[in-house]
Length: 177
Image 1 (tube, one colour):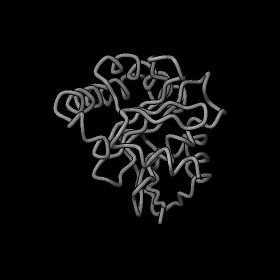
Image 2 (cartoon, rainbow, N blue to C red):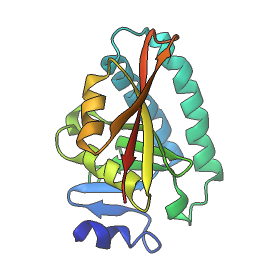
Image 3 (cartoon, rainbow, N blue to C red):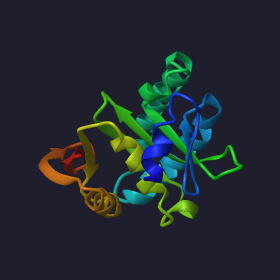
Image 4 (tube, rainbow, N blue to C red):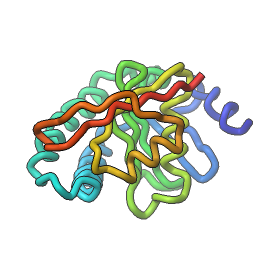
């Protein structure tokens, strides 16, 4: 019940405290740290791909995050598609979930030091909140990411060969409500 009550406070408070997690909309000052963290985790989760594969994707991510910070409606938290995790009392971002088109989980990641403590689950709960269905895709070699998604109700819908990555890209769906 604590999760529901906390999430109902969106219109009142700019951040959500859920258990030991602090979730808030992304701020422009978060972008560099999050991109560095994302690049490290992407390379670690996909050892067969060169860093250059991810740096190109990182530039596109930077543009999306900056656009959200500059043009997003700061007073309308329900429309925010980028949610950041910070430790209580800290402003340093340690995790991010990005939701596009109100159903596509574009990215979800947590710093290595915070993994295994429920932070990813809280970010996923934020992604699911108020939505009927979520979709995402993950490269075949990202076993840890696939397992996390399956633990949170995602199932494989189809596989399409990604020639740039030289492996299957797995499209997954999750019925939330």
